[in-house]
Length: 255
Ligand SMILES: Nc1ncnc2c1ncn2[C@@H]1O[C@H](COP(=O)(O)OP(=O)(O)OP(=O)(O)O)[C@@H](O)[C@H]1O
Image (cartoon, rainbow, N blue to C red; front, side):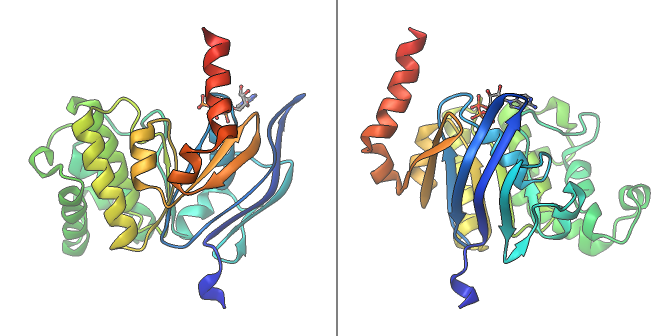
């Protein structure tokens, strides 16, 4: 039975900021090992939902369950221990540190070492893990380059490598393709598909780049004005009149 249980269950969450209802009674489920995208026009409430799942925001109402465990009131620091890793819309890397050191720091939560010791004397096992992750995201030629010297696309791949250092079961990606060139988007497409299919990692992403969303997602949840307006496969979503109207209506309002 439990094998069929979704890995992530968001049930009726509402988030209010003063008088503004940013997320309104939102429910959706993410199946284990799948790639699930959360899309919608600007201001729809996607990042707010994401921040609730990674526990940076507290929903006013509703429940968030990860692998059967109610995490609605967990502190954000507990999420790493549960195998939940996230990346940020605005990158949070250590610019002065190398690619290698940035990924190494991602190992902190499951290494018994203090940060200082981890940087000075990582075990052979940890060094191998870090190198394998750098290889995985295709950054080996930049292993010793300082993060701030990488171009934006490579910095985003580095953030994913660092998130993978946590050995996550659920990877939350906030706009991973924003600002990337086509070639980088193709690399990201391949990497995320592999993480889901080969490693069984569950991926939830917020993304505006439809080329990526439509190519990699098993399911898509569409939000508009804080509410879920549609859910389905990429094909169903791209043909859904309510979704098309939400996007066009928004575009028209800006013309
Ligand atoms: N900390 C906050 N305090 C007050 N209002 C907020 C806060 N965070 C978000 N909001 C508001 O909540 C609404 C939803 O914002 P949110 O960032 O979740 O949307 P989004 O779908 O992620 O948009 P985008 O695609 O532009 O990132 C917006 O009206 C936003 O201004």
